[in-house]
Amino acid sequence: MAVAAPPRAQDRIGRLERIWEERPGLLGWLTTVDHKRIALLYFFATLVFFAAGGVEALLIRTQLAGPDQSVVSPGTYDELMTMHGVTMIFLFIIPITVGAFGNYLVPLMIGARDMAFPRLNALSFWLFLGSGIFMYTGLALGMAPNAGWFDYVPLALKPYDPGLNIDFYALGLIFNGISSTAAAINFIATIFKLRAPGMSLNRMPLFCFAMLAVSFALVFALPALTIDCVYLELQRKLGFHFFDVASGGDPLLWQHLFWIFGHPEVYIIVLPAFGIATSIIPTFARRRMVAFPLVAIAELLVAFIGFGVWAHHMFATGLATITLIFFAAASMMVVIPSTIQIYAWLMTVTTGRPQFRAPLMFIGGFILFFVIGGLSGIMFAAIPFNQATTDTYFVVAHFHFIIFGAAVFPLLGGMYYWFPKVTGRMYHERWAQASFWLTFLGTSLTFFPMHIVGLLGMTRRIYTYQAGLGWDAYNLSETVGAFILAAGLLIIFANLVVSAFRGAPAGPDPFYGGTLEWSIPSPPPEYNFAVIPKVSSPYPNWDRADREEDARRLEQGVLVLEQGHETPASTVLDGRLDEVLDMPSESPLPVALALCVALVFVALLTSHYAVAGIFGALAVLALGAWHWREPAEG
Image (cartoon, rainbow, N blue to C red):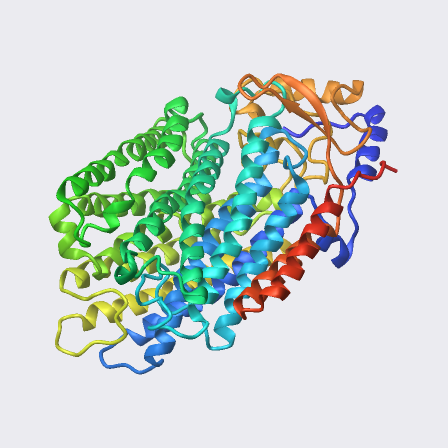
């Protein structure tokens, strides 16, 4: 229910519009600190990278469509395979879930007017964009990363890969990690401190619990990857011996550090999908989520247990048997909180009055793919099976059922679900449902046969294969499926683009959603809430009396906060009003600082260390200007 604006409240709303209004045009987008604008920047940037990763995938599948193909050269294939993985993990799924969906929705769901650190939020986007351009520059120059997205040593060391390919990888991921860490810290502070008064932790939307779990996982997982890449660059550039057995190093050190990040990263990718599912299901089931507290705890437990699972990627490396048993047990334990959520989702739908519109259909596809991927994941927890299928296409099938089926399908459903909120217009429902079935068919046909061909002995990272091995028909079906999947995705985006201009007006709440973003106009105003909303339950938009109270408070001027860039801060546990914060306004400093950091990495790539120091000093100066006293509000 939208907050009404009585005539006596119009002047307050007008003042809020003047205070929170940002510059129009390109300059406004370059200097913005509005979380909604930054989310849209993330969204469109990640879609460009998604398209690049998709083209890479189609080239890979075309190369493998039949035996003895020569569509691309072996070296190009290595670069395509590596850049596809790096792009989809670091430049698409994580930034679109955290940067786009999280940025846009978390402040709206908790009743805040912005993120806790708006300029840091802008900086995280520009750093992300810089890191993506940095790595794709390597592809444009014919020097893209080429040792797999996991970049195992010793193949990634200087003697075996003397060009700049691996340097683009290591420096690019360090660069990207700065962006992700900054974003994660911002989300933690925002969720803990900027919830509307009355929103205690037990009343916080489940999507926000998922984002909180993701943020903590990023903060604790990324340092391992960053240190790994630093060690690799020190060995490649300055002759250190972290991974050389002859000098006291160990190549398994790379795998341990990488997978200490790499397996929590799987849950970093999937947890936002859980959060999207817990937003869409109650809306279209027309009831509150079953076992709400258990689902919230399960989201946190998935992230926590995920840190004890990393070595199940290393069962074939010769680790001690007792070590393998511990990680096998942890791999089975992580199933428990995931299963709690699956039962809660299904019970919510079956005990409600479900409306099977496109967003809920994508969630249904997500649950099916997640169950299939989860079952094959349990199989990998069995040590003998894991050792027998390591580095086969069975692993590729499992991974893609989780990463694409379980992570991307909720994103596609979420695009349809929140499209009316972002644009103020409705998508075309029949085309949306058609796109679901095409995408579902393409995903199934692309990835399910990989289980079979993997059991037949086809290994990962293979460039070509001989005829007569029994793989031909499966690989052809996978390639056909990949193009069907691409067609389904193109229909989704065509539907959204056309609907953005020609769709029917949506109104503030076309689906009768339960969370606070549906209580304000579509698209949301720059200040988000004309009055800081009252919260009495986890589904505040269904509390009609509270929304009517908001309208009265707006007319009375209670918690309107129209004296400046202000948002309330609340206590961490109980959500009691703590203080009113002055928020920074738009600034060119985030993009300037990101540019300086980007030039530091370019100089490090080319071994111009003095130049890197100069740009590092400029970055420090930009940071100093950043923290200079804010000008008074006009």
